[in-house]
Length: 336
Length: 156
Image (cartoon, rainbow over all chains, first blue to last red; front, side, top):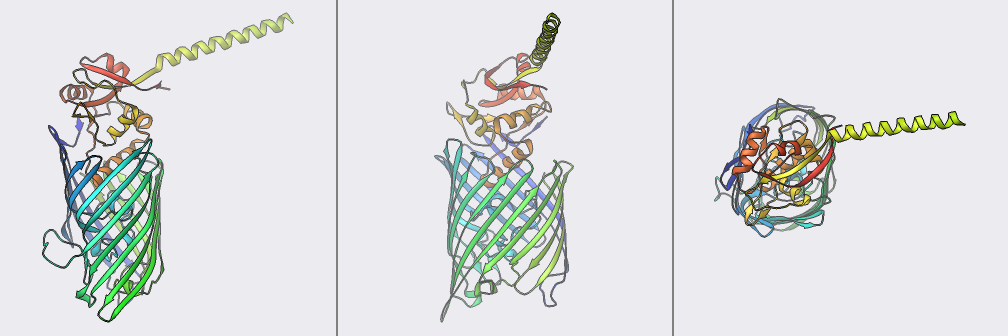
């Protein structure tokens, strides 16, 4: 028996389905909170790659309760040692955003760190760009020096961030976003990686009474793995210039997270994460995202069973600017 | 004095016998992991570093033919040994890393074989295909050639 990606002569591809069903319960919500005390989530993330000689294709479609979106659609080619992509892709800002997909099968935790939350989930950053992405690794003996350079259309800000939608490309107003991510792999192509990143984005925001927002985010990240442990952390410095008709407001803050995963055996993973924000927590930019979680502490356990099924329990304490609430999440994920 | 010499001689003989037993036992369980491909192919050798990269999804060409890695999982040990000794990862780490590369870079994971006959058939019929088998498995196959020893060790 062969467990194989699909192969048609020189053409090869991967076709994967990631269904999920989850339940969320919240406690101690403020009376005027926009969040519900309970909620459910379900959906399927459909992922495909296709390679033919130097031609590359990568697609990710999310069909979920509250969202149906082509999350990634990339056409690419191999040029020298680099991969050059055109299309809609995950902005290589930091580590988490390019490492994981829209489901949570690949993550230990159910939730993402709030600083890399998706645009439509109270995210602060351009998570998806549409344009050009060049990435690769320069081999230096046993080490790798990786790079990713992205230039594309970033999101628009209305009541939330709206990345350019491939299903409705003419909607909204989108401006330039540029990202550079450089990293070191101490052992070439191994999962341990340390990197630096920089992003500059012009965010059209006339729907909320601003001319635009000029955002710089920069920071560092690391992911260290052994047989039983995985430690992942990142810090983001954000500087936002909100340009109004009568002047501009500027604020700065640093948002960070650190997650530790421990795998005592092949089935169980115990994880914990802390997230914190320092700086202008009450500044003008964060005021645009009242549900953004500025500080969080969470813990959880994941059981991998029945060959590619995962059951995860996650409990967290969450601070927004105006609220503190507890959250209890249960989720089933699978990969087919 | 004579008694002491005799005792020492006995101990020495016992030690020698023990050593012979240990060595002979080790020899009977010694096995090698070989890198193999079809003997029709033009590939003659591949460095350990390139083998590692190939099985992690990096494109490697030989004589303009893209090499295609095939994971041999025909017994419970062989894939673990290959991944630990050549790729420097546990099976769990490897699977996660291979999947991560699919998601980040659009790579493909190598196919996994749990039947040696199917593996050998695909090695013979797929240009550029490369895999690894135990030396005793190799002796029973025709049409394959060894590109070198990846690892030698004992079962114990």
